Length: 235
Length: 73
Image (cartoon, rainbow over all chains, first blue to last red):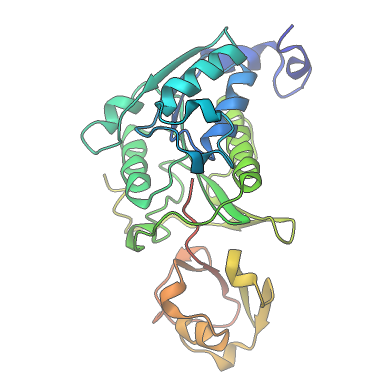
């Protein structure tokens, strides 16, 4: 009964629902993007969700990170998120890893993933995760948000990655301004993209970046070219 | 013509898409100067979907995409 309405969709059906159940999705970062990503993947019936985050809940998270309440302040995000998600859908398996992503641990943390979803807020972790996914040949759904703006793209060995675009030459920046609705829209797009990849659907965002503009109310797609000299694709 | 696509905060006070005379600009950085975008505020600059440097040449038919940092999660 739980999945009845989505099983009615031509793109899903019984076979698609089985694919979702058989999938393992690793979500890195349980914050603003992670909240909608984890919520919708849980509701959709992804069989196994692995959550990775080293942080604890703080008051400044609560304008956008709707997995948490004021009572959770000071508690581990992965512990709180796991409790909440398991209540949302007791049929799926949720595993939490209270760890910081490092080059030494990342490959082990993602090795069982059907898809990895990047919801982190810093450049260094994005680059470590991107390299590991390319090395392991695991599809990666990337996104970033700030203010009323955001972007999303999917990355694989055959298509452009963040290093191809020059992200590896960017200067690290401090956490920027953000409103919950932006993270909600872009995180929901990430969850949708993840589901489409698992289902093997066409129209995914490999080789394309989708830009969300919450001020003008628009989405714009940009075609991306893989770099022949990309350091990350060479790993 | 050169098509220039601006994203995120670079759109504020400017157009979303501009079409510029290719003969007026030689390097990628020239377009930033014309649009009054400080070079140090640019995070990603693409020419026809490929990563570009400010010193790269641009010409007729090129599509430029210019982004500020948007890296939060």
